Image 1 (cartoon, rainbow, N blue to C red):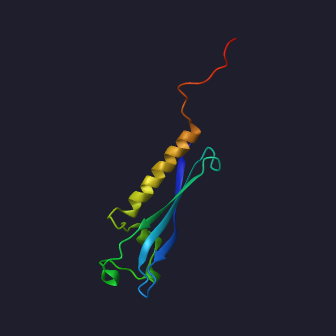
Image 2: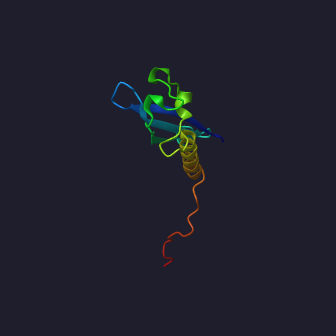
Image 3: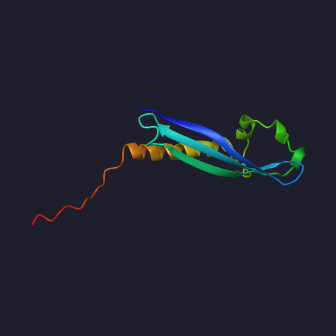
Length: 116
């Protein structure tokens, strides 16, 4: 049994002007266990807001047409938290969900029929 994760950028939201500054990245993480890829599939998405301060003069600015997925995944959100940290959090949550599905916890108490 091995859990695999597939990460993808689903959409980029840009400021509605000629600068085409990306203001939000929508990321998806699809995870499943090899023992039952369909039955354990868990998909989680996140909208990650970015700072557009500095505009096209910001350090490391890349024009919209020259962006790559790896470039966008290397960015940080408006609080300075790396997009990769958001992705790792989603992977962890998906993994926890899948593990609970494969090995559900034992209920500490159960109802039984009255013996009379």
